[in-house]
Image (cartoon, rainbow, N blue to C red):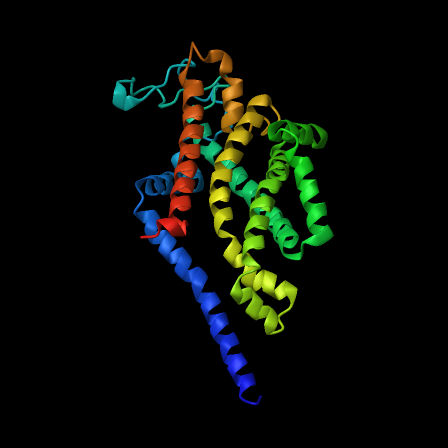
Length: 316
């Protein structure tokens, strides 16, 4: 018996070291596989470029996004971009995307709009990911009545069309970016909770979890240090794709007038304010729409690349 105790301690130490090394090896291998997938690399490049644009917006944008240029310069007619490189009179001020209906530089507003869309996308997924993963982990690991209560609440939320439920939440809380972010996060929580629960149900029966129980580890310690780190893999993919969905939802709310309020530069609200000019000045709706499309495409490509990179059956 005297020799059994050191042996158990050695096994526990080896188990701890193996579990600590496993996530590192998993993510390092996933990163290498991601870099071998063209779609994932393209998505990563697009997202990196958009993040760089958002961070350097004050340096890239030639004007303040909310600055009205009436009386400050001889602005070009709305709907007429002026690019000196393409033959526009060098004496005229340059507006490569023209000016909007309120005589503000459209390029500057598109650049600053990346800050709103990306911040909402990342913040929404962070809130939904944290709450949903926690609820799903608790429900899957403890089971019983707690599992039933949490999952039935998730079922109720899933029973409503997500966009309509988010609109109802914003209508009750009031317009604005913060309330829109909260509404989109709330309707996204059940997805993360269900995926996390299914992963936890499979992992809690594995041998290393049983070994931790045998060594006397508490349920909370097992859940936090053993189960959750190994159950997060599918949520990373869903979270990446969820950012794209959140950006689209934010644009939809902005278009409906429920998201960012004037004069904030946000792509959806820019589309809404210039939608009547789609034939007379199509570029005023084209460029914000193109920015939304490129950003969403980047996150979708990265999500697909991560899904393949994190799939053990596709490991090479």
